[in-house]
Length: 276
Image (cartoon, rainbow, N blue to C red; front, top):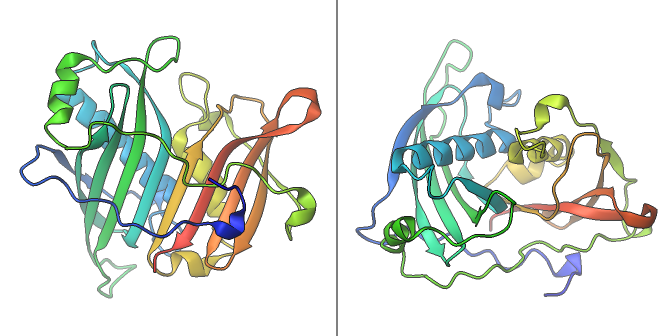
């Protein structure tokens, strides 16, 4: 796949629906004020936290903490077909959309029922989010590991795609500084951004993207897709620089961290684009 951003994003392809008759996990949640922007829209980092909550609850309900305890996310795709806003309850459904022996595409649908309040007295549309995460089963050393037979048996009944392969959706190679219109911007990390493994929490990456979207309000004013691909872990004390490029209806962001020989390497890539 070429790494010229002008060839991106690829053609929009809607996420596939659940296989007819397949089992799935479901639960109800509440939109919280800590996850919304000044317009009461649930931010991308808020949606990422909800996806983590649903995954954790699904994991606990399935009872595989002993056989398959460690998972990492390689990519998350979030389609905001209609934004979730506050106040609202939302219903989440989660299932396996595709898998191989060591990784899975875990699909999630979230639909919110928007309420009125003293601060938001006028009726607003209900929310509809479709998402998929590429989850890798790893061992205690962080290396890809075979999914247990018991879990595999359950996941295989949810999908007919049993030979899942990873293919990048974002351009991994960052343009040089003189190829972009804006100078690199530092994103300052906080101690609260890190998980128990001293890695930057998946949702914390998207807080940096929300800072960028302030200058691109048109991208979130209509249905849009966000794709984040995690390439390297970010640990405490790491300096992050954001390289940005806007091409038509798509914003590209490369999250750069120090590498060897004083060079910068890409830790994550993000695209936010309108859905045609």
